[in-house]
Length: 310
Image (cartoon, rainbow, N blue to C red; front, top):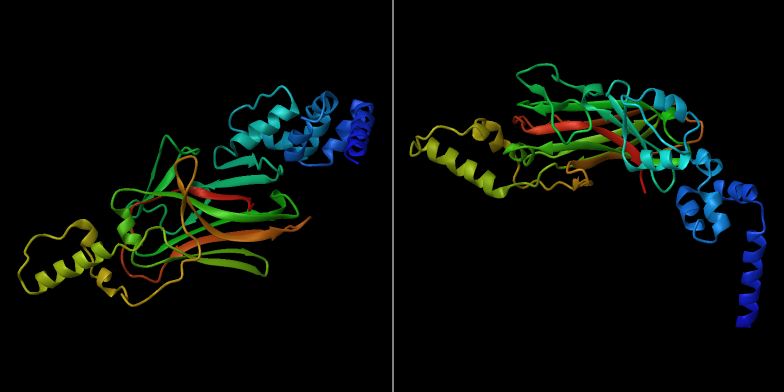
């Protein structure tokens, strides 16, 4: 029985090995980038076919030439396979550096990241609330740094036709929190949403864990001040009475937690959606904290990334 299976397997291998490379290439192009890499290990015929432009042209976006023409820096490549792995290995900046584009490695689905400059940030152009800075580890020339605001509202939009069809996507806020800024995000959770037509995906998130030690310290210092015992000046992070308004008994179900990215930044999911084939809708994404009256600071926003949810 075992010998029969081996003979049958070898017969199949022999049959495929005798196929013209062009036919094998067409067969491989009907799979996925991940499968193409696996099939290249089957035989020399499959390896040669799996590396051909016939295969990788199918995995690239149909409008890849137009996309490359929008790149900030020229993109050079020797083959379509090389181009695919270039785009799936890192994003390229497009549209004068306001957006980045890449491909998801296993499927070839499109990925975009909207820079902070393309987002709608309430008071984003008011220097006393936000400032624009450059950071060496950001893919964009500028990022937005929050100085101090009581009302935090960030929104972004992208057309669904720019994305791959029949694909489940998620949007992520890409950010950092500097210094003691995480304190100001400890007392009130933030709310996120992704809206596509009638579909709404919303989360309650927290960019920082509730710091009970910090909360108790502030309450104790305020108590001592009230009694006239403590006469030291306020520290900047404590300089508002709104911290005392946080409800200690309130429990909040955090639906999405931040995670560290490979590039050293943090990200938190804003929501998800399924992009249908031929869909032409506006995808609206938001990150907000407007219920708490306390001031928030220290958030650095690089942008919002939209990529397939695996």
